[in-house]
Length: 362
Image 1: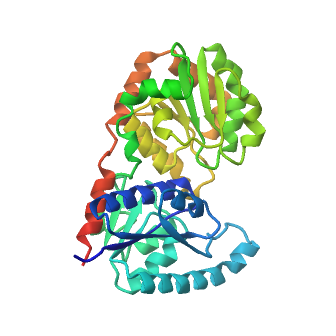
Image 2: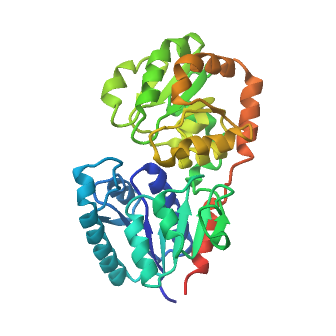
Image 3: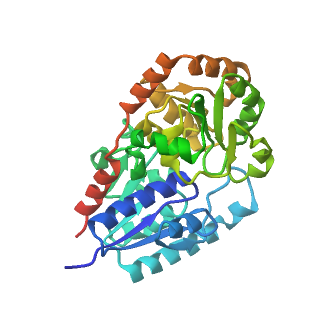
């Protein structure tokens, strides 16, 4: 029996890395002796996260184009040429059956080279509005796995498969973990638990908001688990006290979701997919600083189906306090949001994406 080989590429943020790891885990469970290699961007977080998940990774010297004139932009052509050359070398040596890209800078050169060498490629697009890399790669890709409807504006329609986004398998049954979660985080059973998620790196505007609102939360008998991100932990750890837990990063996402009654979150594609599966009432505060404002579009797709509340950063000072208080006091509203967002979940995404990949093995 031939040994299957797969290369996965995605990174820059957790939103590109975790889906790639979820897909790798599914392929590994189907083909235990498969060889799996990751390719990432040299100085980005995938260089730590992928080895922690048990996979080998090679780094390319690549970064995205900045929107203004910078030294980095002047370096971009050199980085691109270097990355294309290195991608060709990696593919020639490894000889993959299929190459899979989940977005991020490194997937551009790698999939481009794979396409030119006639190796089957699969793109996994997490957002409701694709980035430029995936739009360019889609012309040659064999299959494009997406999480949102109406993407034929950007991609060839015959290649699109609506699968949803891969999420960690341990999130599929959090109902049964509530007791364990309450013990793990030493929570008070008689209080509502508010979970704040600003993404793996953190979100300055959300952190400023939470700091300002902390006393209000406590006065409403709410306890807080606040993931402030690694860039901000030093600024906010002083708020670690009775009923408030400040963390740079949360390892046990399954337990923290199980413990939460209400969530405040950015609207990155992975977060939106996870929150749909765990079915918690959520207030989305999209980051305005992302390409094509895709976080607002991701959140709006849920709000349109009455599955979440959306507040833009520009509305926070005026509206947040009232919106939060009316939600936390209204169990009926919480239940309704919870039921509606669950209807949008696609729990079999990882399995369906792996099916698409397997079809392409020659």
